Length: 492
Image (cartoon, rainbow, N blue to C red; front, side, top):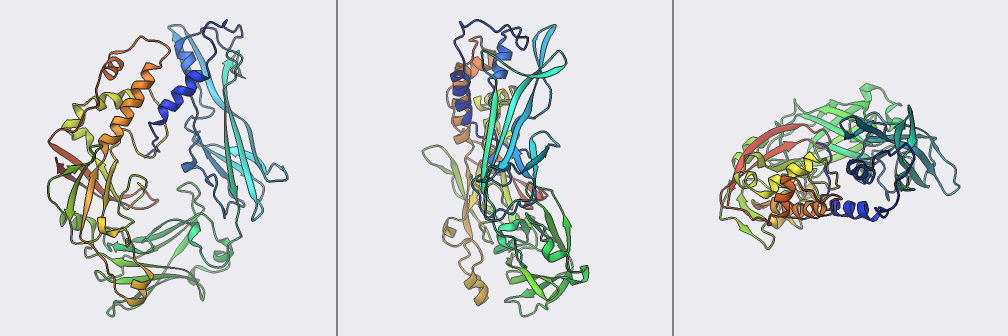
């Protein structure tokens, strides 16, 4: 799913949009770039370009980075070098595109380490560079300039003595070269997850580790026969230690990934609610070790079918509805979808297409307007905010994963069997409706469409009694693979 963005920044964009404008009474330019001072051209030229730190590698402000020889990735919400045609009349249109006009990677000495850039999809810009030094701070500067096709040539737009340019600055610090063990900070995603409570053996039987460093210093020195996975039972006396092979490969499936380790657990018979360890060895050396506890259930569907939603839903001051649940198994930190952490194993999403309240509300008009007008904003949640749901165990605030003590003692404790599902959709709907209303009011032209007029005249609606279906699914971290998808309904 494409990264989605904070609608609350629409208002900021609108403020910048109008703050950058000159006096509309000022004489129009005579340069060939702008021949008609149309509303469409004005609004396009004043569009804001955002750079998303979440999709960058490394992220700005990060340290101990292992990007010594790997490209630096900059993410833009506008496609570079993609021609954009703005039609201002039946027979008149202008063509624009965003171009890279500057890109550097420098340390304190000022030497530019950047060599070239590559952009396969237009949104992600990969900056190649010379080998970087360890324990050194680097700054990446990138500039985009809006250009127009004039007489067959791409020329910088000059509009009211202003050329639209957009800059991105990323600062990071490199670390040490890795040693002969895989370090946790180089693991982007893994499955099973280290310290998870509820590994379900039949939900997905392949194990993997997605790495941000290739560890050639380890894997190039050994043969495939020396790559072994050792599986041991920590508190399962009936489990016999098993030794299986693993493979390594160069891989770039996600941003920042350089390598991947794969192994199969299909032939392993795990017992329920027991603790196990997985060791990865390279020859005689152990290069990584993780621990997990198995669930009472072998698959996610059986686990969810055992979950009972009970009680009457309640709401707080912002009308975020919540409903308690009882279950036969604990939801650990890797499964507790939170608003600020949507990359979890268990994913909840409101089924808004089949929700009567949403389809009859002003919010449906608001989000249709956002999509129709291609409004670009920055936030992690989607819009409409279907994934604005949470699942958590209220008593697990101080104990939400397998601990060292539990591993050492062979006893998993503090497993609570009740929790809460929260339906936060309306909180973001209201915020988005306010922002869109303000944006419409700040338009250059006061000629409103029917939808714009309806939004301007609307009030912030509340939930109505009824059924609120949602989808609960199991997703593999980093892979984007959905292994199970189930629909349930909250009754308010």
